[in-house]
Length: 269
Image (cartoon, rainbow, N blue to C red; front, side, top):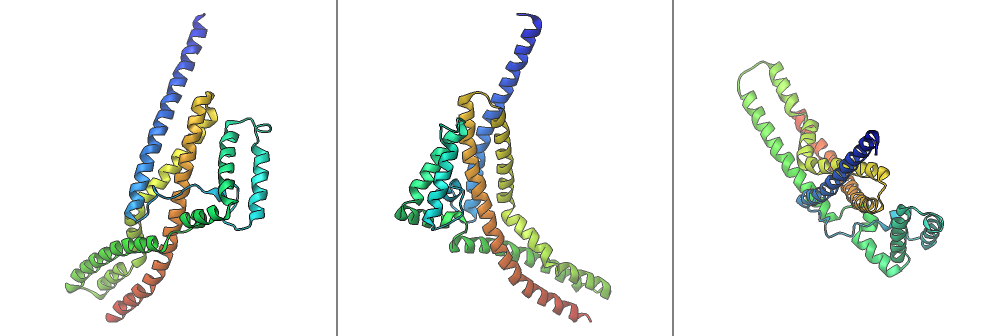
């Protein structure tokens, strides 16, 4: 073997080691992110570890439905697409398993009903208890910030000063929208950081999967990607639920805080 050939071989070996190290880091990061996500969700009263997080509707390319014909038609369409006689990829093998598992549940009325109860009709909404827990966690944080802001405001206006300075202090304490954003960030910031990292890890997984040539490692990456996609979907659904709760609270807070701000402004006129 010539020097050039040996050099090329070393380069390939180095590249393979780097790829293997990247894959090992990816698998470790996935486990760490699963634990962190579950921990942050639990603080908000959400148990993601015990939930049925498989989305059988998405597996069949559907949104929640009771239309058995639509479920059946979608199943047979996907089976044809991913059948081993037509599609030889390892991805097709994984998708076939998912499709068959989903159809086995959704075609059976009793199993479908049980699944819908566990997953809130495909995981599209948070329960009333969880929504209440989220609202309470946010309002506790907001109230603490509000009390602190008004305490500092009272200290400032207790000292004799010009009307313009008092007006500026009022506008500062009356900026409830800014305080709302601070409270939202403090209450949900770490969970949303988890979501951002999960999405980044999904991207890395897909990139590594695209360049992997070894079947056994490709299969491991596909299994890991499936776990990450479950995490990603769970996060998206939780974040949508949080946003819905926050929209209602914002509307309630707006009326109360704007009324207080108006009274403060009138007090120095």
